[in-house]
Length: 494
Image (cartoon, rainbow, N blue to C red; front, side):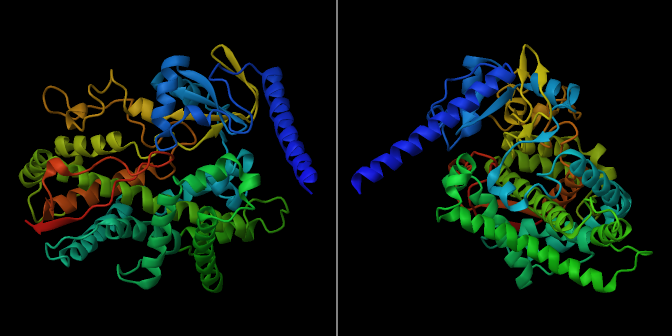
């Protein structure tokens, strides 16, 4: 028995090493990958990475290997792009070649190439084009949607008043507002902030955003074939993804019963009409599975990214009371305390606008972006990257660029102000990424952040429970997503 066990172990090690060497040989025969640290079989370059702060580790390696280099996550090579020039060159100048989606197995294995985020090729092009058109038809970037966001901002303020200046954790309340906006677009419905179904959904999203950085999910991304058979928290992550998808499917069923193709109410109606239109096309990508995953993608991204940015932003203003005071002064002077903020006020609020940009720059919500991949053998600078190779455009290397943003590790709205105090634009502001794979809801997110942020600051003063100097503002985990540490605050009516 012991001999059999040793033989089996030896065989597994041999096959693993042989597979790694075969892949290594193939990658270097087909293409000429950028240099990088020498990987080990199975684990790749994991020993050179700090799993608690992967973006910082990748920036450190860039100092040794340059702005374009190769690192191995497990057995899979990934080309890292560090700095604005190479990120722009890849995602804008050669955008069509870097258009693929790189692997993120913990999500990809559940969504199986469907939807907006983890699809590719013609399916992705069709679904993105359809979704962009539909979102615009339902007001994205228009006055009609602005009014909807303004209404939700007032609902948020009323909910915040119920805290009666007592300490509370803002996690769920701040996520509820953007969630209601995306719900109104997806299925023409909004929820009360104390609705049990609503709160359960918020809990699912919040847990998964925290869990995606966990060691369990990172191990799954490195060795998915092995981890599929191992119990652990990654199983809970996948189940929560399915729960969100099932919630969307329930809404789809409700819409199927009352669909009027001549009068679409929302995104789901439009998608269902498209399914009916292409029902004779067996190869059509407009089906219920893609509808469920597209809806899940929009629902998740439209809720948590904006909610997390707001939560991190309020924490930074608690830490920097002088910044909060200047925002209050500008809002009082330009808008007053009774007129609801609108997008036309943005040009007249340069300091507040700079603070919002600095929040997004400083927190680098998605420091590595989502992984890209090249869709063909691609010549990039002096190298040839084989088709299918994953690519990390390191957004943190752009948002924390020392030349563009002096003292980038310091929170300073002055990074976005000129010497006259006017707002200063910069091409280095890339929290939504660049190119054709950039965030589909960027214009909506910008509108929400401005209107929610200014409405909250117009009506409340933020009070910390501890000395501002003692507030911890370091992200709880730095991997795929930067999340603020948990905290409580008091909102005192102004």
